[in-house]
Amino acid sequence: MFIKSICGFILTSFTIINAHSQDQESRVFIDNFFGQSAKLVYLNKLSENEIEDMQNALAQDTLYKLGAKLDELNDRLLLTPRERSYVQNELTQLFKLAWTDELFKNGKVLTIAVVDSIFKDQTRSWMYFEAHYGSRLYSFSKPIFLRDHSLCIFYSGYTCGPRCGQGKLMVFKKKNSTWIAWMDLFRWES
Image (cartoon, rainbow, N blue to C red; front, side):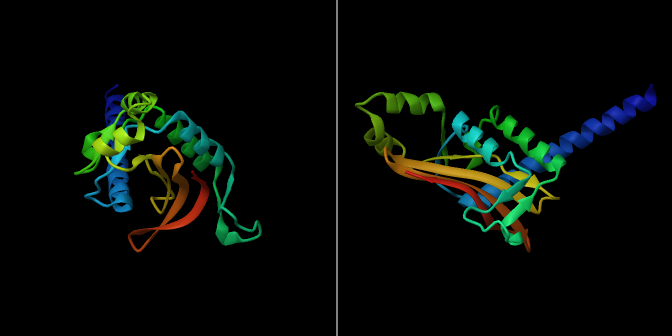
């Protein structure tokens, strides 16, 4: 019984330490991607459509760089069944994830309910948003790290008006402690 308790404690401690390490690594990645003192206005969570688009794009064993020739080995990423399962699990967790104001020193987080109230009111819409918050509203995923943190899958996008915005799902490679954009998996523009 004592050994089971010790094993349980060790496993729980490792899980907590690993989760904390993942969160720290996520924050470092996001800081590097946007800049540590970014003045971003961002949604507290991704929309269900954004997450579903990510799930669809990452549902295959082989991920191809946008516009790649299928015979180019450098333009694809082959996921193991275990990696694919891990990625899909991480994507499912995004439905529950909510960012806070503490993510960026100069950032402002808005809930989907607040954004909906601004844009459903035709008298407010983008003019109100720009006057009170700025010209862009960002959304982004929690980074998904693979292969001992040498690869990272990350989605980011923004809207800047009724027909203005862009977003992309990318794979980054770590090279000499720096994240380098490697593959665009999908991209949208408005």
